[in-house]
Length: 238
Length: 254
Image (cartoon, rainbow over all chains, first blue to last red):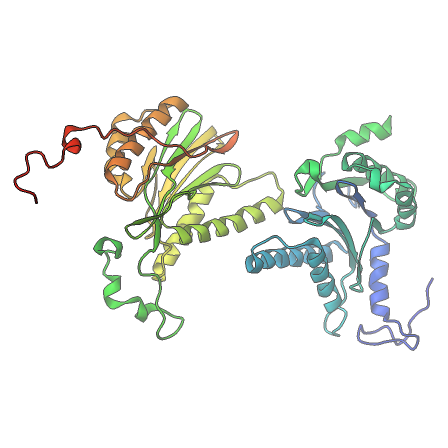
């Protein structure tokens, strides 16, 4: 696929002659091979969806949580190495708690995204740390309205209308671009995200999957809530 | 004010000895802005809690619209008497506790028994450091347990003493309200009966406790959640002959 970094890819503190840090790029490959994660910003909130590829038939339904609450007003979905994702969530929760302890009010989504990005970036600066093998979609609703951020393993963080990570990200992004997001309510958004994830699922290549959905919107009182989705199975099967 | 000093003689040797944060520092010795009694009792649908909305600064009735009962999570109410700033700090700890409990999103939530246990640990550990949170806390709530809907009511004070009962009162309520509650409380009272009993206690406290004011809040916690009612006043009667002409029968002008 892309060029092999022979010799320049052994450490995250080594640049290649053409200015690339291969270790960070390899970390991104881990994200690209994982189940799809989608986030969209609707007119009244955010919807997050994860395609949880089921690795074993023995696994209990509903386990392996992929979308986590970081504060009452924000949720974080990670794509890539699940254990790395949990570490980022843990850090985000502690940043949110310490901000509130110091400033007396809930952390703004922008500030939270900044702090998570700084933390992810931190792990690309030292040879004794490895970069996080996961990309993160952070959605929150604060005074400035609903916001969606995506943080990549390199530590870059941008604000988005719609974002996708993982295997089906190209197809997902195409679908998201077709949506008229400014006119979509979150209630409609959930259905769209579910459709996108079912759409990018390759029956032949991938195994079975579980859909995990969550939203933060006016209807949920600006609280991050998981959305129960047993009903969707019926819509698509019929 | 001798009653404000802890009775165990710790102030004699001094917290200056026990303070681990350096010479010349002292820990809390006495409260500044205080709330008076809180009364609570179990009734048919849950727990009812009431107190006045006053906070005194020594003998001055300084703040008259203070809410001393707050909801904690989905299943409990907390009421506090004593130092108001310490109560605000306790509310902050409870906010952190309930937020991290909420974020687990595992279908469980902290019930009144758990919150009471947590507060007991906090209060007792602070007292052991000679730096108490100068409060008497009342914790009441309802939560589904193995035996169905379980009502819970308990209290914990600044030295860590804690217990569970069908009716609780703090401060002056211990002396004035508890005797009434012991005589007239019964199992499964209706909300109206419970309010009547609580108002009877509040009235006695209003007449006899110098630091109470005539502005009360009643709160209830049931399986539906917490409701804190808006403040209201009780009717008092001062039309006694002795009050009308206080110096009648007094000898001389002094």
